[in-house]
Length: 322
Image (tube, rainbow, N blue to C red):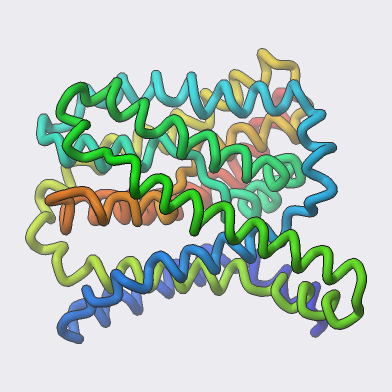
């Protein structure tokens, strides 16, 4: 089996790989004491995941993607106007606990920039456009998330949202992995060795994401029992979001007159959130552990199930509307 076939096999089975990582991490979290010490490994694992994700984004293609103004306009309008307004409506169904609301807002206001690309590809969306848009989406959400939290939570957000963690996340989770990915791409273009290294790293996105899921779940699981009732209270909101957000994305893509493939990409982006990347921000919120991380991880588990539906449902929606 060559590298391309192995990569395709990993991508086709990634949902089950992720669930296996979650199940094993859950078992370890219950059976082995003090797995919460794994919290310190979350950021390095995330940096690795984002590095190998950015490595799949041809730097030369970013300029061409930025010329797709209609697609970018629809993508940004969905994720930073339509979805926030929808989430504002969903807040009415959340408990009044500010930490619960903070956790839900942190995860639902941030569009995914990693495995959404592969899911979109499996759902016959234009994954190329999504892939090239990931740096812009990540930068935009890091800039806008503190603003939205203050708008939606009011003065109480000031105690939870500090600029330091966001700047730290931008440097270590965006800037450095992106620059390293660009350097590897340049090396690959000039050297056979670099090309082999880049090709080998092309196998890493799915295992790296599974590693992040494993570390996150194993670190949070020992403390989950303390917050189970409050965590379960957000499940209906997450389910409603999973059902309706892609439809909002699809509706905006129709108004923007995108191609069916580009419209599916916008729908996937609307429904898929950046839970793993915002988690380090939640971990530094005063008093957040264990509630806020548990709320964020719960969204990830519901979302993985939803992706199985998206792969088939969004594609059928596109065929009927095309």
